[in-house]
Image (cartoon, rainbow, N blue to C red):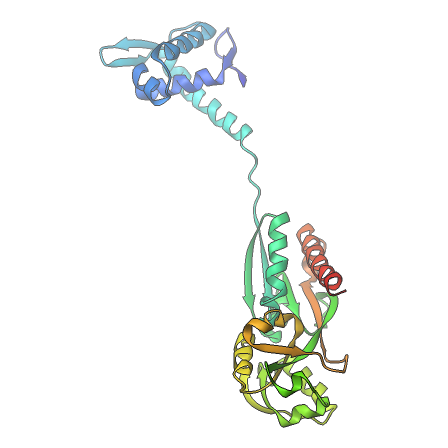
Length: 307
């Protein structure tokens, strides 16, 4: 890079020579500077002499211990520092503020869809991630208060300040241990009434209410032996023969490894909706549109894979 120095008649300078000038001035030694920069002393001397010719003045005088700045060298020093700072700012890419993508989800989504979507997001956007789990009511409050950017939900939110994108529903499967009689013969959904049941979440959770409503159609009011908020915990209990359960199909990708089997029920209403919710305040932001694209592509891939 060539720079124009306004205080001397010879005006075109090599900034690399100015950088070398600053190093010698700080070290007060040509030999020490040469060692630091892995250059020969003759090269350092020749480049300093070239700079002095360009400026038409002497920059250093020799001393018994090395060199020291002349009056002109002292005058040049702060200006050379400024020039190096300007060059550094010009050559360094402008630092862009990194956005934080705040995502909230229930336990079912955070163990399946959320990690995959965030992985794809990081491949195309430079963002920081902030992920937390919460109940349905927590997510409604966070969205309305603009405390979160996106929520993955199994039930819709009806609020004027919340936007929703709906994706394909997820089937709800019967989960039984390997070797259970239902694996080979499930007489009817009504037969579930005779089995001990392990419920996901408490009675106030939307998924739990959905399960209760669907089973009630068949006059099934399950004998709930356990209530767990851990999907892996439910699988472990079922695998040990402590009961059966109903879980979203997307959470059963590791069923065989966990010692359980997922059985599709003969009623298509046994499914859980899939929604992505976000505040209306960020509706038109590029990052919002990009993440929606990522999530849409994720669910489209799932549909193609199943097809």
